[in-house]
Image (cartoon, rainbow, N blue to C red; front, side, top):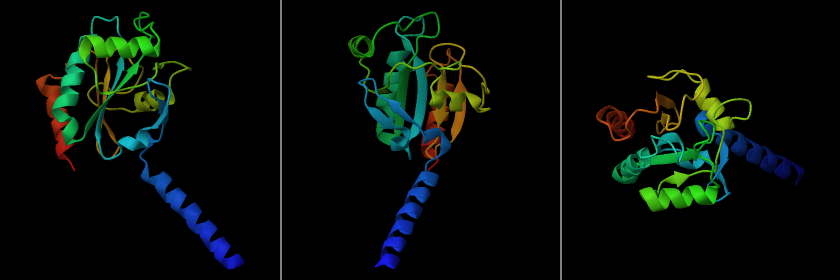
Length: 186
């Protein structure tokens, strides 16, 4: 009996270690959804992901509609758009999560996944963004997020394969080509 219990314990530990190793570093984080629930980013494994820090009172706020178009156009092909509100740039996201979601839904019809407000830079930065900004990815490279609506592209294997500045149009030819390439690499 002791040997059976020991074998079972070893099997369970091995299973957990193997599963933890199966999660790529970029998806090995738990974040809060905009309604306050924990969400493991590993749930997005096998999807192409566009991560964006957002704001409701920014000159680039209309990008919400283009992000929604991107979500609508490619969601059924395995694309997930993840919006992370941030108030670090000019205080342009001062509202509560409830206010943010109402704004996004009412003004831009946002249906893609939104998360609780985060800091993307500094000592208080969200760990997921600390990871993203530590990577030297093209075309923007590593370092602090410069402004609202900066975009990170993650492939189906959880590799961060691109980082794009705030002015990059989410439905622009070049960005869409990168998304399509990632979607086609299975």
